[in-house]
Length: 293
Image 1 (cartoon, helix red, strand yellow):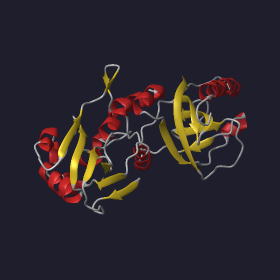
Image 2 (cartoon, rainbow, N blue to C red):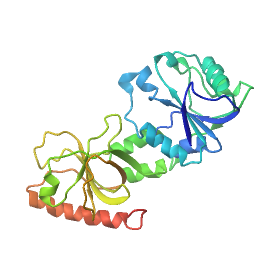
Image 3 (tube, rainbow, N blue to C red):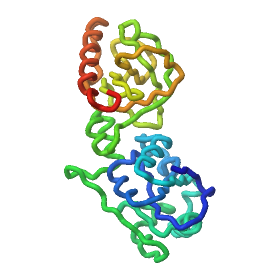
Image 4 (spheres, rainbow, N blue to C red):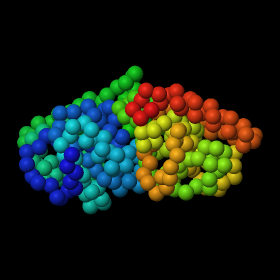
């Protein structure tokens, strides 16, 4: 999939889906279906127009691009969203971007899509423009609940990653460079690969999860390790099952599959070790039969 940023886009006839698409969830996929091109924004528009209300994101730009590419999209076009762009009127967005830059002949959006200065543009304004076909996709409901990025963020925050994954259509994923820790896991017999979480992303609620780390089964702790006084803040610690090797400095991609338990303080290191053995066996059972598991 080709990735370009405005204004470096060749104008031609395009069938384009437009949206923020954080998470590329099932509702987003319904909007994107049938489009050869996808138009999105970076950073998230709310971070520019209302910074205090900026949401923690489900996906980095790279992960979003990867998920969109997996849908068979040929081209991802990214609008660098800044204060100047936010001041463009809805009519200017249609004229300058959809028509002028892209040459859109078909525009697909979700029914709640808003655009232009102060979100004054809506689906009716798009549909009234006869220069392209407007394909408005209804909001998707699953079990009576609207599938939305905000709802999925709430599920992730609550630790309900299995439920979130069903709505995402792919595992919730965090990634980053493996950092040196205080080797506490090694002392306990469970050496971990440690990630410092990206502050822009939503984190699963504190607890222990069955995951795949670079495709291998891993028991992953998210939290502050209440059994020990570390002063290190939130950490993501992945114990990769049946693995030995030095991966410091390399990228680790962690797919969250299921929550095993909440974070809690243990009376002794031995009690924690016994629980960690149970966590590992649960992880082994959950990941068995999955790709990489």
